[in-house]
Length: 281
Length: 358
Image (tube, rainbow over all chains, first blue to last red; front, side):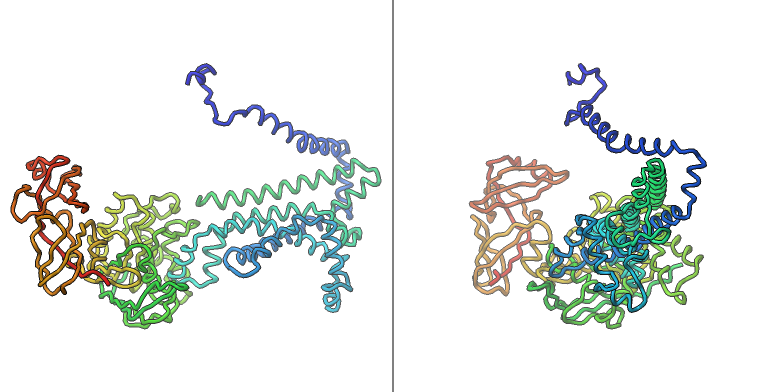
């Protein structure tokens, strides 16, 4: 008590000391690792004149790369979200031999070096690969087309969706489902009206994380994409190409544009989640 | 508006249920009469909740027969049984408002059976006022107290006009004061609706106060079924008397229709119809009369401590190795001037004797 008074009578002593020190380190680390590099990036991009910016961004090659990167990432993330619910459901609700192994398998796309994933997927989906050959017979080429990019993005995003939904599903009150049954609900009605609404925030988080990962994915995509300008060329690859041509400002502009678009999309997803969950929490 | 309920009966015959190796229900036969409030009372693990969940169809019975309102329900899915079920944990849909929770059972019906919007709104509002939650329809369950949530759960179950109402420990998650209030309220609601209701509880006071009849379960069997007064006054077995409140247990020996309790100075007690053998005798604390130590025919005991509990006095006594609890009016206890170490006489107003289980 006397210590508190000596310190000015206002500040409460925390049980764990060191607020000042830890906050200092936090701010330092965040500055060095995030704020300063991003600031540099934006500054570099800003060295271009508005007309230069406009001409770079409106070139057909750049425009189609953006459409490809963000469009495929978004579709892949949404599909990952729903597949993620299904996998999480199986892992949470059923007990079967080998469940632990299956559960740890989910994390493999997290851990696998992206180049390894890229080569594996390319070998599988090439026109003479295990999956690629039968698909080619049906007239669908996956490797070296936008479909290949899509497969790679599905692959890298899936664990995010599964891991977001899994704990929420595990926490769901089984009795709410039983109550719905006694009130006359069919299984599909229970899923759409009782389970899915409660999973929604976790689903959105999973989709957002899968999207963020997929939009910036480079390693696994460049192996399988074929990288044809205007058709299967992703934005991160365009950035690399500009760097190789020593066009640093152009690369920074593309990077900044990606950054802004990603932030806006993540912000929208978060707002949607807050809006949905504020209704009943 | 709610249609008046047509009271339905529930009949269970020879129902057995196994979980792995344990027998949760052992050849249970039980019937709930139309319009009655039946309590399933028992300690945890006695099978009472399993029985209720089998009636609801949330567990499947292994063998036996179940009819609800005369229809064979054993092979019906829960949604076709016409039951309303209320869970101890309320099990409300937390992402829906109170109104939507209550309307749920109506909204999910197929188009041909679904009431129109204004009929649904009318019925929900009527139920809201029935459970005394007028004007709370727009709230979410998280914004309600425990007692309010349980009433929403009840309204939600009533909305689909069930043939019977099943309540699983409906007051279990509430604090003592709310529990008693809600108990009285539920009894008066039941009297108005006369909807056949089965509720599960482990609280003997709750069962005795609320129910028309009480079924006492132990280890998957029904030990006794009867009105509260009957099970309290004439417990069918040592288990029942031990479960229905506090009781003193004495060992005794029956000979020629007389039971001798292992207590110094205690007169033999009539035990008609019991075989000559060792037996157990039970005396409830309030059935013990404290008298002077020298009184004739009174067992002697020594006072160990005296606690005053509101209007009553609880006296802890010993007689040899036997511990005895007795209740007395405060005035009586004060007149005897009880203090630790003092000898007193005990007279038993009622003694219940059971043969020892073999």
